[in-house]
Length: 247
Picture 1 (cartoon, rainbow, N blue to C red):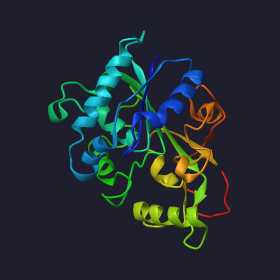
Picture 2: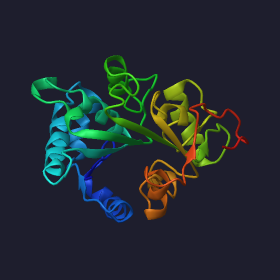
Picture 3: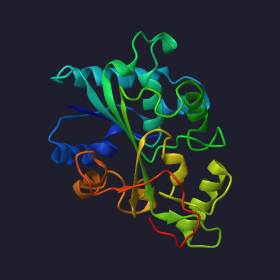
Picture 4: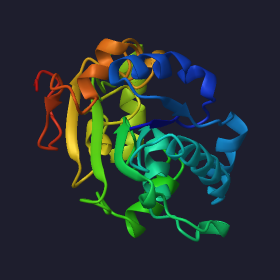
């Protein structure tokens, strides 16, 4: 089944070329990357105009569906791409759209996606709040299989090293407290969507700027979250509260 890869906030497709290649090797399936540029994402951050990105996602999905033997695809959304992927599933008629993504997607995998945020200005909070009101949790299950992947690599610490201090500030803005585990940008509890299958990856970060390895780093990391592999650590959705606690 073809795979559509939708990148995160302010990203452009070339940063996912390595991940695209590794994902094709692991899955044996063709991978289609949504063409986006930072200026496309600026509309999401400053206004409610998400239709432009949803149309780009829809175009890529239709391209992948054309080579699918089932008429369905797997959608992999990294970071904010996973949140917008949830909107796409039910976006029939949204801002001029005429079809809903649930017609074409039967599995949604989100990687470090900020599915909730207290602030509308941080972590895609505006988008997350919108989708959580209209399509809460794994809204289209069981027609769509939801898999939410979160990294447990950096504990927020106001007095720690540079990465821990940065994580502390970001985590606190999103969930109201900074001393929690996450992938360096998204707290674990935000990445685990209610109703979805949860996978927690110890030692995996949000992206290269947070340290290696990140979700799309290599075939080995991808094999930990791809559903046909069993190397990932399962989670009940609870968030560790101690810096020394382990999963």
